[in-house]
Each structure stands twice: as structure tokens, then as C-alpha cells.
Image 1 (cartoon, rainbow, N blue to C red):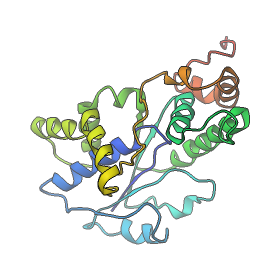
Image 2 (image 1 turned 90 degrees about the vertical axis):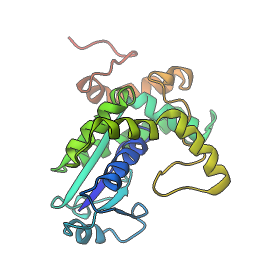
Image 3 (image 1 turned 60 degrees about the vertical axis):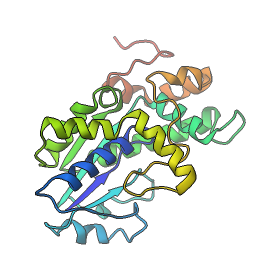
Image 4 (image 1 turned 135 degrees about the vertical axis):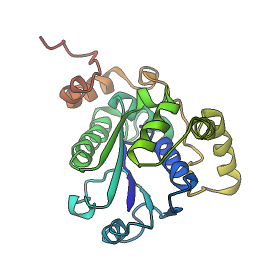
Length: 240
């Protein structure tokens, strides 16, 4: 079986990776997964791993336009997908990359390209049959609920002691400690934390990062998707 963590950029996919990894490695009835680097192995291997009912493999990947649906199996695969307000996705990517105004990732063209990719990825991953979907703004505020939900999705028995232990393991304070460790010792593949991983994480932080032109560009591109997922467009008139 394979577990593919495939969220939008900056949408809590590392958090869901860590929770799923803890659930699978600590469950007494589950075999310890062999964690593979995301797509550094040939993609056709995913089909082979998916058909093995005993060995559990985890893969973390973000959508790329070069991906093909046939590369990601339906049978034997569990997909964990997260999404977020696209304005916060763009703002968080900008903060993580420290992109200043004038950089190719900034401005109307830069953020438009970012969000078009995320929307294509959203449509891509939602075609998977065994799919868990989480909204960043909700899962980040209820980590114990996230642990229970993913345990149910992965068919892993979990008691309240385990919920508390895993919730503490993935807490923001623990994540900040890991960022410091990464700077000294490098990336732990079981945690997927990078040295510039944590930027802000707050809902609506885009207001302090994006220009008014960037906000308007994102809302034009993503208006239908945003409204369908409960996000309010601030530069466009409300739909009647």
C-alpha cells in the first residue's frame, strides 16, 4: 500500500505527513513504512508498491504540470490532500522564498502562475478514489481532530492517549525545535521539515504580504474555486 501526501503548497501537508507517519509506525498492527523520497524513485514503482498489502510506503509530493494521472495508482493507494485560501498559499510561498517585489515570483504574473498551478493540482488530486481532504484553516486549529480523522482514514486504531501524544509531537513548539535541528543536522526524512519551513501560518496573513494588485490577480483567477470552498473575495463584487 502507498500513502501519498499531496496537498497544495503551504497547506499543512507536512503536518498531515507527520501525523500519518506517526499513526502508521506506532500502530501495533501496522508494518513500519519504508519512507521514500518523494518521486526521486521512478514513478512506475508507485504501482508496484501499491499492490503490496503488507509493506506500507509513504510519499510526499506537490502537483507539477508534468505529472500524469496514470502515474498515480487508484488501487492500493490512499491519498491525503490539503487545501488553503489561495491568497495565503501565495503569501506563504513568497515569505518562505523571501521573494521581494521585482522578483519573477512576485507581481500579477508571478502570483497568477502560482495559483493556476495550485488549481490544476486541486482538480488533479480530486480524481483519486481513496482520498482524504482537509482544509488548512480547520485542521491547524484542531490537531486532535486531525489525528482521529486520519486514523479513521488509514484504518489505524487509536486511543485518546495516542491522540494526545501525536498532537504534542506535531505541535508548533516542537516544529520550531525541529527547524533549529535541521539547520544543525539536516532534514529528517520522517519529519519533512526544512530550515525555512515555518513562516507565519496564520489565516489571513496574506494581508501583510501581498500587494493589492497581487490580491486582485489571485481573486480573478480563483474566484469560482474560492467561493465554492467558502473563501470570500474582497476585490470582487459578491455573487447574487
